[in-house]
Image 1 (cartoon, rainbow, N blue to C red):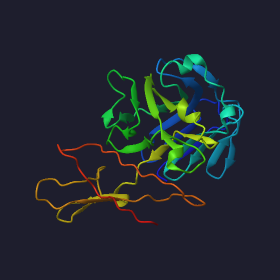
Image 2 (image 1 turned 180 degrees about the vertical axis):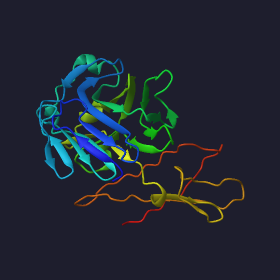
Image 3 (image 1 turned 45 degrees about the vertical axis):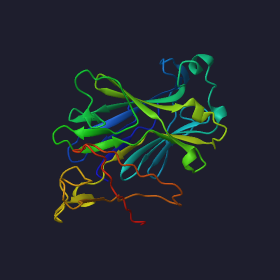
Image 4 (image 1 turned 135 degrees about the vertical axis):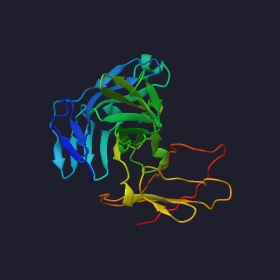
Length: 294
């Protein structure tokens, strides 16, 4: 799986989970924290904190039933390529009603806070720019956040998009929220915000799930590559490309494969997202995408 996963049983135990790179010993660990209502004025109405509850283990899935209070469950799954942390809320009645102060403060949202701590050899990049140096300004993004090895620049882990979805299994039942990042000492505080309007929408099909997933980077070398205009295949490095290097070149091709994905049942809805890391062009780069249904 290219990582080692460690887990403490009690949800209120502090740094509950750790992911370690076996090649370097570098790590990232996380601490589930507050669930609360908030708004653009950063006013807070507490909902719950992690409870003194032990995990129920089933294969690679740890679940803390009612870990954030009745009807609010937390789970952590160590799949072969990702660390899926889900807050599941059974019904709208499982949440206290947001008060008038929260509603009047602009963009009222449900906010799940997690704290991440990393070893000295790991840095944090937000949308392609190193974030954990200099002034450490707060960042709000729905984009790409990466944990990279400082020695080589290799991406070890990265945050998936701040998704939430209901049980309808439809695109209309999914929403991309925002991540708000703050640094406190050696720790990274992550606030995942989901709009109150989406939660209270009568079209919601409960339960809903709040995703704070960290994915493993697609495997290097054999699992990603790009081919230049004369057909030379490059499997080293950390980039794939689209477009042409210069006018008159033939189009290069890039490829990647996702291996070791364990599942049961049927995939009803799937999303594939590509985020550009950089461009050497003043025009729009258009790329054709093809996939193997396997």
